[in-house]
Amino acid sequence: MARSVSLFHDERISVHASIEGSLLKPHILKLTYELIKAYGLLNHVSLRLTPTQWQPASVAEVTRFHTDAYVHFLEQLESNAAEVRDEAGNYVLNPSVVFTETAWLYSQAYTGGSLAAARMLRSSETDIAICWMGGQTHARRDCASGFSFVNDVVLAILALLQPSVEEPNEERRVLFLNLDAWHCSGVEEAFYTTDRVLCLSLHHRADGVYPGSGGSADCGEERGKHHTINLPVSDGLTDENLDALLLPVLAAAAERFCPHVIVCCAGAGLIAGDRLGCLNVSLDGHSRVLKALMSLELPLLVLGGCGFTQLNAAKVWCHATATLCGVELPMALPEHSYMDYYLHEPTLSVPTCTLDNRNSALALEALKETALYSVEQMPQRVKPQLKPVRAAAPPADAPPPLARTSTSVIGGASACIGLAATGAPPTDVEMRSARTRCESTADASAAASGMEPAAVPPASADEGGGAPAPVPAGENGAVVGMDVDGGEGDAGRERIDDDMVAEEHRR
Image (cartoon, rainbow, N blue to C red):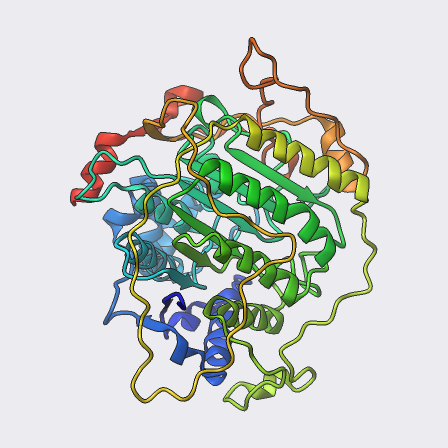
């Protein structure tokens, strides 16, 4: 039976685009939505629009992760930008941040969509929820990073972790997959010390590439040790490389971790031709990962992430929507109001680039083995019992559906198996402050050059989990120490325990 798909969108999102601030995504989202509509894909989804079916994120919702002072600053940008201009330096992690006048309104829109999608999944009202507006993975609790002002991914994951009224003691688990050219630095940092979120990230990593974090040796700390898995790749990654590296790790991680729900940031940055991504993946390669996620038959939240070639990004997210709906699209783009944008390439295709592939087979194999080693160190969880979701019926006036495609995947991605857990169940979700990060120069240079990274030592029976992980690398490889909530290191850490999560659920 076909799975129900819900699409969350704000038809006014494009007004937040800014040439001066180099904020392109709101305009890309307009192109994406118009292309989805032109292909007739709205007949295959349950369309959820604001303000009739969901609301922009409120201050109370955003401050469940972000600090009051930072959110208050964002609120002032629209009407009091001149007065708070001198404060901007206190709320940026790197020089790439440009606050626009509507940064807060934009953040409320994409965060509200991601939260509404997460809640619909949480209440078992849909199988797959899509919010291409979301996927801003870089913002920290008290500052912006890149074009990420509010970290909607962290907030959506927190919503998905909340226990239900029927099962108040349930400790839910979320598998987060970052499929983009840029490392999910803010999400990794937020859940680095918890074992209830497995953060798996495939991203481009080289000297000078933003954000500079996400080394393969970064595997989590404390309860979260081995629950962070990074797959940093070099220039020119191809479809074949992506299949051989990511799909086996994803299948093994899902089988071991047995999540209740999956969150995927399906960015367009890894697609060939992206202005900044420098990778060489096709639309089909991108879709094969989504099919692997669908084959796990778990509730799935798909967010948009990044992308800096506008037309390619629109094609990627339209093609991904069709994949998630199980629909095969014709190659010729249908006529619509933005057809003039595509005159040079009026097809649903993105040609691969003439780009040197700096990912050697030896380096990718070593990277995969390192990731699989981390997976093996996690305790085997028990497969959760999920509530069935009734497939949404298409509108009565819908045209005949396009041909559906199979969700089978080359290389396979097996579903979770129900084995007895070997370790104690997780008892908390921990929000850690930013901490000093450093990683061996050898690993960073190996990722950039395609050389084989250093081998991971086998686990010791006395240590029960292998050698301790080094402290993760900071943005742009620099040593970063950030004071969060007036504290340093553990002193600035906020612990979210079960009682607090349950209290948020009752609000």
